[in-house]
Length: 137
Ligand code: AMP
Ligand code: ZN
Image (tube, rainbow, N blue to C red; front, side, top):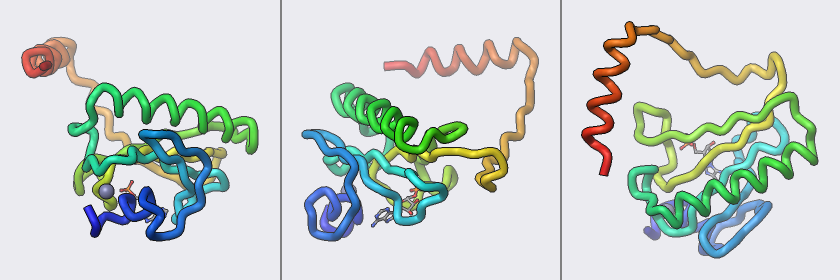
């Protein structure tokens, strides 16, 4: 995908600031850093979103995430660490090449995600779960 910015980073055609790299994943600094140590973990192949991750890539991306999360904890000792991952425009995705954000967090750092909990009755949760179970591959 020659017009994909993260494919170009993986290929070394545009600059990035790398933290860790292996055969399947790349961890690098987000240019739109929210707090110091804000990293992205991307898969190396062009996979647009979570729906396209096979088991090998899914495992690889989380193995890298856990490893660089420990590095962020050691390096910055943040008060918290948020993993954020968007699929689709409605979810806030702007780069359509799968990546996870790791954002070191502090009280009152201004990062917000509205969470409008509906707390439905158990019967509704059961119906929702049944629908999902029926859709599992
Ligand atoms: P999203 O798709 O919502 O997860 O957002 C994409 C993220 O990629 C944003 O936080 C951008 O700051 C970041 N980003 C976009 N281009 C680059 C780049 N060339 N190098 C590093 N980070 C980038
Ligand atoms: Zn790509």
